Image 1 (cartoon, one colour):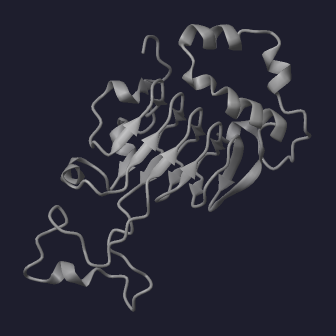
Image 2: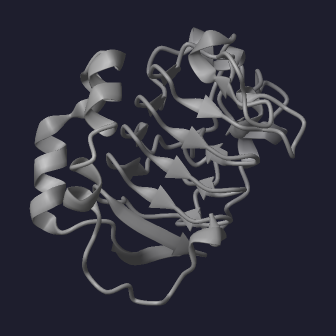
Length: 217
């Protein structure tokens, strides 16, 4: 990665623990304060699940910033069906239960893929729950618990996380989504973002709500 800030690493340049985890170019994890690598961010999805073709996947786009201690909660409902009388997976107590690596509890339900778009910033120690979709350009405040889908260029925070505001006007968001700059080659990206005209054009001119400060990320 060249010079790094607090041991940040490009995720897809290191061994990822499951084939069901897919990460785009230039997405980095900065695990400095938790002493681990990106694999520690993903719970209930690892090499044990590689033998299972039909399982929920974690898909992360390009140019995402993942802060220290972020957790992606995977594994469907892990056999806990709270619509039953008990949420306890009773079949694990059967003498003939082969174990999770070979069979899932009867109450197991998939939640769908967890999909993180491009240019998403996920703040310190946030938790992304099962099957959540976070769209391009979104920002998640530190220690948020994301339980609902997040729209493009939206800022969410809290537990459970709620919409705080949009980063830009809807007109500008539509332009950025059509542009898809993350698919350009690096030189074109450098040239585009070094333009003195791009900053005032994309900066949100709407009055801030005052519900958060920039240092909460």
